[in-house]
Image (cartoon, rainbow, N blue to C red; front, top):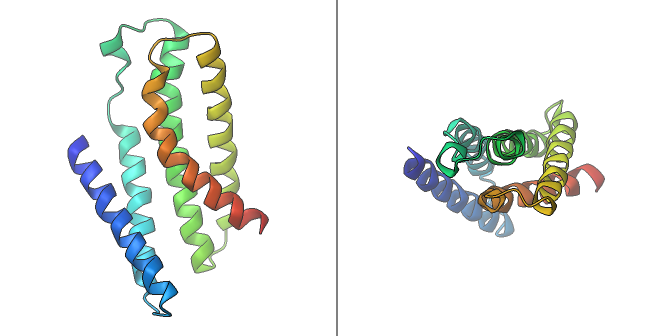
Length: 148
């Protein structure tokens, strides 16, 4: 299932890139934004449902549980919320700033927790880095929309 989600994510990112290029060319195909952002939100949420790797790494204490299971799942859900918030903002729906605020603050808190776990040398925390590669662009876009 993970391979399917990765392929779906790449396809939706390509659709988002095409939508951005068409927007620069003054084409009015906003449906591509809707499809790509809604699909990315769904894919990010489904990534949170994927089983964690903590049992394979032998982490049995709370710090390992927090760093390898809880924080990654919360990060995926926060990224999904932020992505849907961006979609709501671009469409002008009510509640966009609430979604963006919740997503941005959750990603920020999870980042602080991961930094603390990294300093106290919890094994395997570097497995969360690919999630951060997906969370930070959403964080930056949401922060731009909130404070611009």
